[in-house]
Image (cartoon, rainbow, N blue to C red; front, side, top):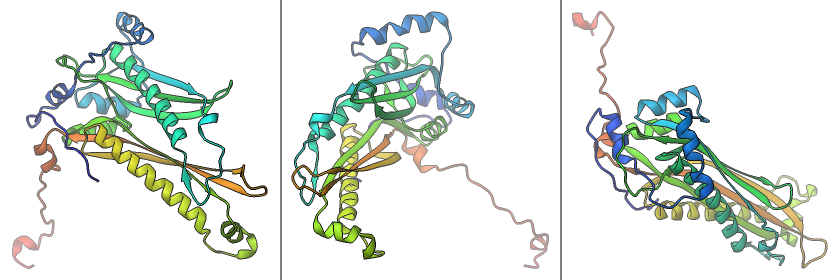
Length: 304
């Protein structure tokens, strides 16, 4: 995958807190009033909440970060009129609906990171994105995670990072000389008309045969989602991406242009953490060098 090389400051070997402080930065953007209102109460109480498990908490602390609170962002979008009602024919992509999905997820992520900044955090670990129906209509997009910070880190213009990796995975990235640049998304919605060839291959009397139209729909949607994910990695200025998961939803609808036929819709979502290296030395040294010794007593006597 082609990507833009990230920037960062090299660390001294064995200085894990120094690695964290070199990367952390404060937010210079103006915060929404709702997000800013949370900060005084959280700081005055002196307590924090998190979605981290005990092993995750220990791993995050081991690399110089500490949790400051659980953060949340949501956006409700009405997407019914953006999907289009025309017949897609042999194949097509719903561009307006994809853009609406991107906007909704990024709005939820933006509100979550605003809460992180209001709490004095440098980033969000263990980000989880979800989508579901809203009771009043439309779709509810949510983003949740645990805001973390480096105690005593100098301020800077960098916005909080987002990371879909778990606490242990985040710690392993830091120890290996990599830092999260942000959450990368790849979304694609493809559609295909249920033509005569597809209908004939899908009949049970056809036996065990490949339905070529459905295969083409799935492969094209996945390729499009992968391409958009790589575009998002380049937008974040990262070197690569650690993919967190792939989701695919497939549904059918009655074709609006041909009575008795159906259209098939495939929605693919790829999520991952875009990463950039800040220590080449850390990447060259995969781990401590091990000495391998034979436990066979005959080897020392020259019998082997």
